[in-house]
Length: 414
Image (cartoon, rainbow, N blue to C red; front, top):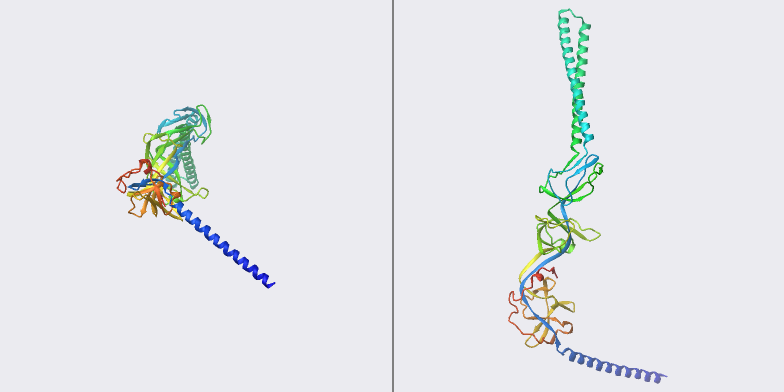
C-alpha cells in the first residue's frame, strides 16, 4: 500500500511539472506575440502644440424678469368708466390711467359741504349766545359788587355763561368733525381717478397686462393693470456650488438670446442669493442689464457668459489629445522625425470645449496625437497622415489661436 501511494505522488508531481512548463511556454509565446503586436505602427492624427490666449468662461441659462412690477387696483368700488391705456403702452409717473364712476362720491362731497355750512351756522349762533351770556355775567358781577344784585342772580349769570361756553365748544367740535368728513369725502372722490405713482427708477414704465375692460364693476383692490419696469431688466440664472463661490457682485456678464442671434447685451452681477436651495442645490444669481431700447422682454430665455479667468500666452493642446493611462492624465507627444509617440503626464489648467491648457510641463512643444491613442503604448511607432507636412508653427505664440467660438466656450479647472 505504501508503494502504491508513493507511485501516485510521483505521478502527480510529474504532471504538475509538465503543466508548469507548458504554461511558461504559452506565457512567453503570448508576450512575444504581444511585443510583436505592440511594435506594429499605428495610424494616427496629430496636431501642433500652440501658445495662445485661453479663457475660463462659465455658460449659464436663465430667464428675464422686470426690474420691478406692481398691480394697479382701485381703493374703492365702482364702475370703470374710462381706461386710458392698454397693453404695451408707455406710462409716466403721476399719469391718469383710469376713471371710475364718481356720481355717488361727488354727492357725498356735496352733502359733506352742506353739513359743514350747517355746522358753521351753529357755530356762529353759539358764538353770539356766548357773547350775550358773557355780557350778562359781567353786568351781574358789577351789580353784585355794588350790592344791587344778589348772590343767586350772580350764580344764575355764571351758570348761563358756562352753558353757552359749552355749547360754543360743541359747535366748534362739530365744525371740525364736519370738515374731516368733507375731507374724507373729497379723498374718496379723488380715488375715482386712478393715477400711477412710484418713487425710485425712471419716470416711465410700460403696461404689462390688462385684467378688466371699460364698464366692469370693480371691487376694492381688484387688479386693473400690471406695470413693469424693464429698463434695466433682470436676468436670473441658477448656479451650482461648483461655480457659486467664483461669482462675485459686480462681475461682468454677457447675455444673448436666440431672438437676437447677432446681438449680445452686457450686464453686471447685481445680487447673489445667500443660500443654495436644498431641492435643486442651486443658488439664484441676478444680472442687471441696461435695456434702453427695451428689446429684451420679461419671460425671454437667455444664455449668459461669465468670464472667471484669462490666461495669455498659454500652452494649449486639443482636448482630444488628453487621455488617461493607469489613472494618470497625459498626452502622446509625437516624434515626427522618428515616427514614435511617447506618453507624457501633464497637469492641466483651463479646459474649454476644444482646447486644454497645459500647465506642466511648461516647455511642451511639438505635436500631439489627437486620434488613435487607444492603440498606443507608452512608446509606440506611428504612421503619420498621408497629407501631413511639418510646419515651423509649433510652439510659437499665437501660431494658430483658437477661434472666437472656442475662446467663449465654458472652461473649467481640472
